[in-house]
Each structure stands twice: as structure tokens, then as C-alpha cells.
Image (cartoon, rainbow, N blue to C red; front, side, top):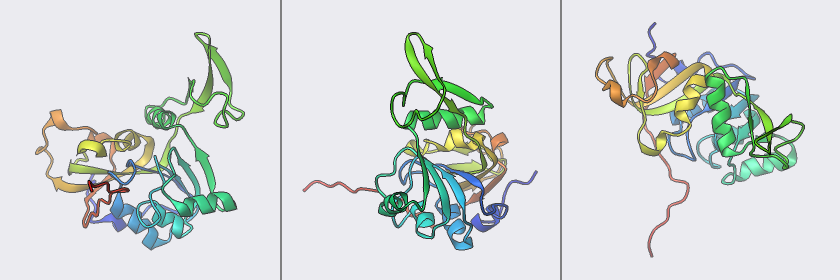
Length: 230
């Protein structure tokens, strides 16, 4: 199987309106910038987006929000995006807020074929809703479902032509678990090398989880808040 594609446009060619997509990254760190831009350019809409956050107004997933290409957002932190807030309050966007640890575990569970699990986080809050409750060791837990998607789109520092990936520093966040949770997983990398050049001991995501890979370009790598000494 030839996994290497030319660019982001070729990588997202199979994504259609109404699909569910997982996006790697934490804040603006380690996000698949090229693929997000390609989705915006193609005008694909009614997407259910699963990510740790919703980006900011002018970058990351915020670009999809501004073009009204999202139908639903599943995330754990959304406080940096005013357009997200506006669409939520106006009822334009369906939102499922998930505790961050629960989100990470739901994605991991989905990727490993675990349909559901019980967790104490969220019990007695709006997160609980109508979910099943069971008691373990004298403490109530709520039932959470594993998460999978039609596609997972992730970003790595370095990858090879077989799809083996290495993440760098903080970019080793939701990217790894999401790689296993997509029916089709696209990886964009800063450096693409021939198979065999990566040290097997350094690989974070094995290539078996990746269906498409390409070398991205023009990464901005923005920082949400720049804090400097006076």
C-alpha cells in the first residue's frame, strides 16, 4: 500500500459533508495546519469535529467555525474562541463538552476497540446527563462511550513512507491516541523520510495506524498567549 500523498488536498480527498473527524493537537500545538486549511478551502460542511479545543478565532479549527463548516464540536477546552462562544449561545453549533481526561480516555478506548467504560469524573454535574451510573469501591461512576471517527487527522514532527511517526515535545498530545481512533488516519509531518531511517526505539505511532501521509509546508506554529518579561 502506497501511503504517501502529494499534499493536504490529496490527503483529504475522501472527506465528505457530514463526516466525523478527530483533529490532533493541544491548543495550537501540534495541530494539522495544512489539512485544516485544505478543509476550509474545499468548503466541506456539517462536520462533527473532535478535538481537545476549538482553536482561536483566526487559526486552527477556528477557521472552520468562521466558515460555518462545523455542525457539532466535541471538546474539553473552548475558552479562546469568541466565534465558538457566539455560535454556542445562538444555537448555531451543537456542543458536547467533555472533561479532558475523559476525552483522552474515550479516544484511547475507541482506538483499542473498547466500546465503553465507567469513570467518576462528571458525576453529579451536567456532564452526567442521562448516563448510566454504577458504584465501584463505594464511589459513583458514569458510563462513557469510546470515540471513533470517519477520519483522524494528526500532525507529527517526523515520519517515514510507511507511516511510522515521531512527535516532538508537547506535540505528543492527542495525536497518538487519535491515530488509532480514525477509520482512516491522515498524518502530516514536517519531515518525511524513507522507510528504515527512523530509529524503531523512537517511534511513537506505528505505521499500521496510518493510511495517508505527506510532508506539510509553511507551518506557522502560533502561540495562543505570548508572555514576556517587562
